[in-house]
Image 1 (cartoon, rainbow, N blue to C red):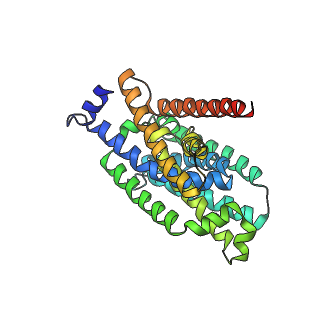
Image 2: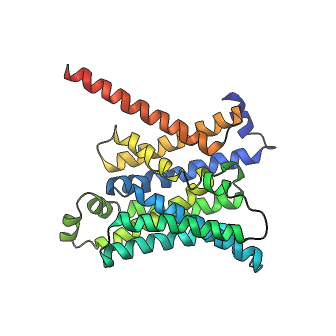
Image 3: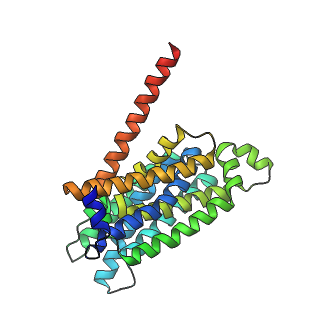
Length: 284
């Protein structure tokens, strides 16, 4: 751990410092949006949106390489495709009255297939592994600015609309009686989830996005009675996962994203096991 701390403050190793800063900033969005998503029980939607993101990345890389559109950056494709996926899920769910699981299954498969087709047709060799599994060590100053801006938007939205989101997440019928536009808040929550997945993409990749969005909240839920308590605790837990994951991966030369998720999974399982043991002791 000491070696990691020294490296973070080493001016000759900026990538590690950028990774830590981006991880800490992203934890704010993970905690806020993750809490709303878990409370609303739409965690599985994150999986569909994240796989659709690969389609946007593949399309952006293709148009950038084949047609010379330098402005068509993969990050732009990722952001646009994540928002479009959220809008499609919301529109079909609210207007076509289709089951969410059906929509999600279709988007999940089509998004992945589209992305892989575009990548395969792009002349230059492109390794999709960094997008699928992430590489937080490739974070740049520009990425940090993007994360900070989106972080600020989510923070302001989540805090200012806290009471309305609270009513919408826990009792939609009650929210309607209070003249809250539940369809609007459903769309807004999906868009916030998309933006957070966009942040997660560079840290743990598209495949493992659900874990970091939900595990800190799942652990915080064991110790919190109020939603805002859960948010704050989730942010702290997320920062711990990312920081410890970076430290372990740096010291033992392991993939950072995978290490972060493994630590999160182990701690979650330990919390559940301890809770079960304590529950049995109390019953005795």
